[in-house]
Image 1 (cartoon, one colour):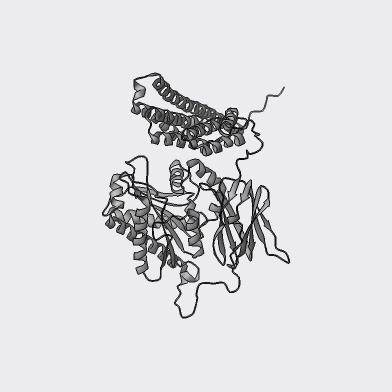
Image 2: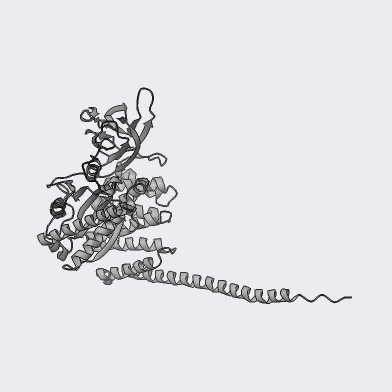
Amino acid sequence: MSSSPKPSPRHTVRTSIQFPHLLVFLLSFAFTIQGTAAAADFIDKRYDLATACYNGLKFDHERSKQRTEWLICADKYRQLYHERPTHEKAAACLYRLGRIYEEMYRRFHLSYDRQEAVAYYEDLQVIFPRSNLADDVIYRIAGIRIGQNRKEEAREFLHRIIEKYPDGDRYGAAVRKLEELQNITTIKATKKLKTRPAYLNSPVRYWSNPDYTRVVIKVSDQIDYQEVLLPDDENHPKRLYVDLENCSLTPEAKKPILVGDGLLKRIRTGQFAPDTVRVVLDTVSLEDYKIFHLKDPYRIVIDISGIRTAGSRTRPNSPERNISLAEQFGLGVKTIILDPGHGGKDPGAVSPTGRLEKNITLSIAKKTAKILNQKKGYNVILTRTKDVFIPLEERTAIANTRKADLFVSIHANSAADPELKGIETYYLNMATSREERKAAARENSSSVSQISDLQKILDDLVKKSKKEESRRLATIIHQNFIDGLNDRYPVNDLGIKKAPFIVLIGARMPAILLETGFISNREEEERLCSQNYQELLAQRITQGIEEYASNLSLAARF
């Protein structure tokens, strides 16, 4: 019997190398699992410690009287969340934070605590919509709104539970609460509850030029609507109509509106069915349109773009005029819209001493316009020159119809924390942080949850906005603020941020929103009300605009 062949040297070497590598791999895999398990266990223990702090307070009569004790427990959850925002306990941390602040409001009656409770609940709903706690926090927000006697908002949140979480443990409670609020006995989850009929009781408004029109339909209450674009035929160009459901038309809103701007011929309204109002836009040359709705008050906004018709007004381009290369490429900065935030019945933020944001922003805007008008070649337009109310969507429409090259909205900030101060600059995009959503909610005069709803509606509009150009403009002006102010006034740089500000939505040019400081902070309040400081802010805005324009001209030469 022959002996077995000896393994070849190659075979021997391969075997001797593979085994140690496999051993190392298995050991490292085991350590990874051990490390992951240890990290998860550490998180769980910290969460349990925070919960023990919270539960202990609820049963310790003396300690629970101290607001600082509640803040200590809240901080334990907050630190854990920020360190591990993707851990399985993250949603629970936000829920507990909301519960703590809600309990603090019940005990100490500070409106700030109630606002924080709602903000943490809304964070959970937005960031973790599939969490089993999502319907719980919506229900708790509804309860808070009922306590504030804001029953319409409470109904919206309860409807959200019925529509989005029919299998959740809060479904039955939401149905019962709606029945209680609306004094009805049955609710069908498969169909949206009908509320009282809404009314179209004022004429449709519009702003236009030959290749752009913004139409705003203001309705008395929230409704469902459907839009249909009819193709052109031998007898008619394209027609766009919007059906407003569960809506009635008053005589004041029936009269047709003649537009005749080269894009729209007229706007017609009629009671198409007993519970449906139809708004028809007869077009001349429609190329594209976008439609979205806004709340408080409820209105439907339609942005229409088209092709210039023969004879429509264009910018002069005569040989006698010395046109820069940047202008030839459409990059010139000539028309600048300055938008002083708020005005009229909308005071904006109010300082501790009663000073109003609307007055500060108007003063800064006027000073900026004066400096820019002294520069050669700029055409500066203010959305308001006195203390009047202008809806947010109208401000953007003004910029679009005047074919502005830049849009700069000027604001002063406010916060519940009186120590918070600094300058921040925004451009239009989806908010990704709680602070950005809160800023947009304040300037839009809405709730943080409405900002979340708005983001879903506006996703496509934001993608097609002048996002990158706006970001560059924000960067340049913001840096001019920081560099120019720090020489004389130390400023806190809060950075460049993004959020869905209504005043920037639909802008067809680079558009930004400046938060020039916090009037809720006593030091910055005094600065913002100082004529010298306002003059310095105006100079920095002007410098930023000039630098941006100069960069465009330089880019056009290459």
